[in-house]
Image (cartoon, rainbow, N blue to C red; front, side, top):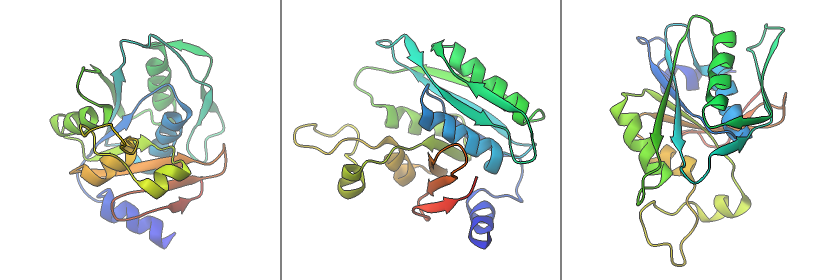
Length: 203
């Protein structure tokens, strides 16, 4: 608990003015876990929450099956499940935010995936444009990623290591970036920031 409070005070600026928190929103379990973490552990009532999505013109239909629980003490459950269109899953996420944090201002930002630019670079650029204080992204770390690290976006793909978007953002973001791995519905979170690696937090 002491370590967690340190994370809140030092990384998130808990006692500072209202912050702009951006969650990378995709129709995946990793993204849903990141949003659940943000709502239950990071976002305060005077903060602004941005759901940021990069639209892929080559993929118009998504499927997401996961649940976003309300913060501790709330008895009801908000769910995002089934086959959802490109904008529908964002509306479901926004609705889940309103249920969990009714007083928090929530908005959706979308950009198109541009040819020649990778996802990590777009997120990094937009976090600066939008004046983001805290960036939250769902993370799926395979054994090979842990061992090899990430390939710098924009570099040669020949014999290169695969890009780990979360690791790249954690390393390069000027604001606090939190990589979130949700461990089951009630299993807690494994968090990574530039200064804290593999920090375990109970749900």
